[in-house]
Length: 109
Length: 114
Image 1 (tube, rainbow over the protein chains, first blue to last red):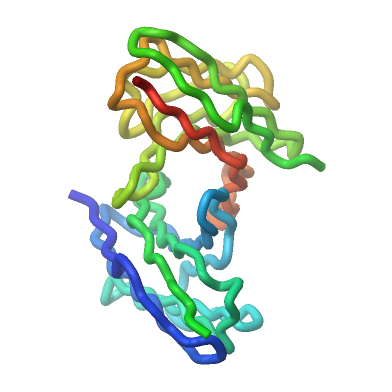
Image 2 (image 1 turned 30 degrees about the vertical axis):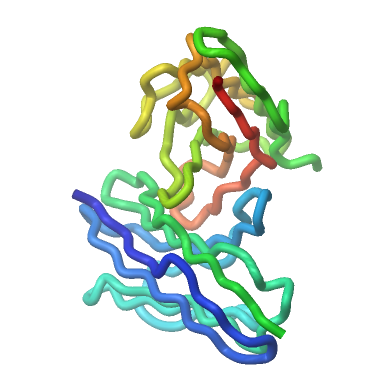
């Protein structure tokens, strides 16, 4: 079956750096997305990776290794507003999105 | 642009009742979809559409119907509500045919079936 694994919950300190990992086993691969979802709100798009390597967008970066079935989202200079769930999603060979259950990130002052 | 507009925001139904969740987008997106989100699980695809007049089943279609008569609208119908359908429902849209086109989500409908 198809599977995406992310840690259920992580805690970090304001101003620090945190890395949220995502491992996947899917039938084919056509790209990986990261979304942010604040409690009670809709997911919003953060990043997309289809080639190996690091994509940087301001304080957020996303890394992909297709050979290892692995990605991470790196958040720098954490702010309280970064407290949210982070969802990893992979597009499989049929271009269907497979979603992880999400990682709830708690930021402490 | 309003983006993806989803109504209602909250709904309580009794078992056996039917209702329609509305979804409209003004971005001229070809692709529209309905997901449900339950605690501890990833988003699960209910139904999707790649254009007006075309719909298809997702991972968990039982108990739900959809139609796509226009590019803008994609309503989701619950035929006979069951407690197992208690969930948060999201409508989402994107450009079709672009692998890196992200989904744009509506604000969600919190449905409780008693």
